[in-house]
Amino acid sequence: NAGTIEARKLTRFDQACVTCAPTRGNVTLASFGDGDISSISFGSMSADGNMTAVAQGDVKLSNLWVSGDLTTIGNTVDLMQNGRNYSNRVMGNVYLTARNGGSIASTQASNILAMSEKGEMRLGNVFVVGNLSAASDSVVFDNPVTTFGDVNIFGRNVSMADGWNNNPLLDARGNITIDALENVTLTGQIYGNAVHL
Image (cartoon, rainbow, N blue to C red):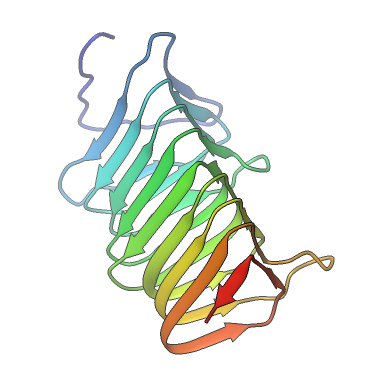
């Protein structure tokens, strides 16, 4: 398709694949009204360009392969693991904007910027080549996060669960800055060039 596909409703069944290839193209998923965008089957969605998902409702995505940037906006936004480790692979940057929290799981990206007006932002099983920044009422690390750059976390409460098999829950080659208005609870290992709490 060389233009725009517009549908009143789009349902993806298990094992379905949506691909924009082989020429470079951008994929935009937009839900009008209070609808959701959900793609959590064992199929895949890929774009040889940028991918954008915007909804008044919730956005739930998994098994993404994006050669450009991924931009997500919704009430809650979840990048989920489904089927395999690091099921979301983004060669560019991940921009997550939510009103009521969300999560980033099983995701590889160049840089990640996650913001939520309120609610909880969960991070885990994430690998970032560059920098990771997250801001929300509550920021929770519940699985290992590795980055070659800096980590900047801001929230009312920031918590980190125990790592597994003596692995650090947060491993950064750059600096780590955690700024909380109320509480910082760290019960796992942290590795960083410099750690500022």
